[in-house]
Picture 1 (cartoon, rainbow, N blue to C red):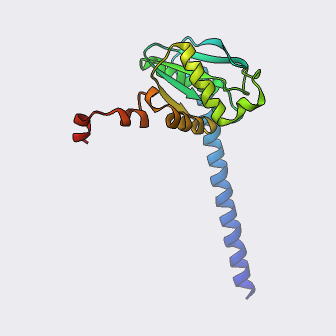
Picture 2 (picture 1 turned 60 degrees about the horizontal axis):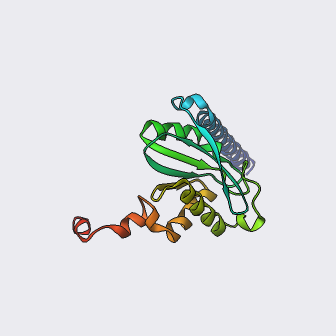
Picture 3 (picture 1 turned 180 degrees about the vertical axis):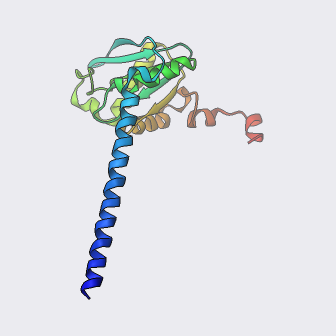
Length: 179
């Protein structure tokens, strides 16, 4: 009986050590990945312009890089526009105009009334933002909360998007026959 308990204890300790080793390994690779994504040299060096636009109730700050088809990149909860800097450079190199705003209430865009922090209000502020920039159609992507806002934007303004649900809705009958 005691031998079985010792074997069981040894198995639990081995399982705990292998779990601990796996967690440490994942954390290590996560930290390496984060430092790569956060490293300005991880993408080719490019010029990132920081600009601002006055909207109802506040000032929206944003970073922009590149020329070409516009792509709006939305950060996640407790993040800011700088999380996209490496991606801005990669997208600029690929021929896109990448735009990453500080969403109302985050980063430098903090002058907005509390009601504007709601996701549906964020969508409306982004619509105003893109209108002020003179951008009628664009691609959109988001991380975490930014992904939720992007999904709401697609639902509310599908015709403004070059890809995703909006594009599928605009396909002609000829295009549908090939699908």
